Amino acid sequence: GGSGTQQEEDSGQVEVPDVVGMTLDDAKKELNDAGLGWKIGKQEESAQYEEGYVMGQDPEDGEKVKKNTQITLDVSTGKAEEQVEVPNVVGQDEADAQKTLEDAGFKVESTAVYSSQPQGEVVATTPEAGTQAAKGSTVTIQVSKGEEKVSVPDVRGTDENTAKNTLSGAGLNVTVTTDYSDSVAQGNVISQDPSGGTKVDAGTNVNIVVSLGSRPVSVPSVVGVSESNAR
Image 1 (cartoon, rainbow, N blue to C red):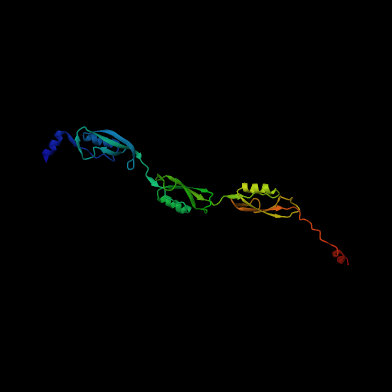
Image 2 (spheres, helix red, strand yellow; image 1 turned 90 degrees about the horizontal axis):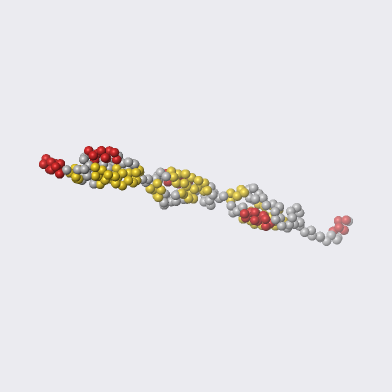
């Protein structure tokens, strides 16, 4: 019993204390009190320990070493951000997507984008689903505001080609029908449906009615009719 302790002291062996989780200053003091020295080893982010705390030591606690041995201390430079996989919320409505992401540990921002998907549905996220992102970081969800609305140009009075080019350029489809008109020159647009200024989805069909000019006047034979009327 007693003699064993005596021998340890005589041989200058000391037990290494546990200094992991202490501040560097407290760890230095603890080691000095035990008759040990210290030196800094790795300095890097830690998943567990805040900046300035000891996250590892070598030799480990409980080992017997010679007095004045330098214990290597690994020190945290700050807590590493925990990485979490971004869940896939594409196709969910905005409220469900927000809850899913918040439950996974993210903050959520949303932006509205034109899309062929139904209004209010999530069409994409940044970062993308399946990627790793820091817990507590922000995921931006892109929420559909439906198809982009286009203002239909007013092409009445323009020639057929100009009207077609104007409507196609606005992202609209065109169909053409014809009709006679006394007031609109042949080849020009008499009317259109939907009318100019109407807001429609991109790709909507606009029908234009193109003038054939005045209706040809057919001269009926009036011989006999006049006579009967005259009687």
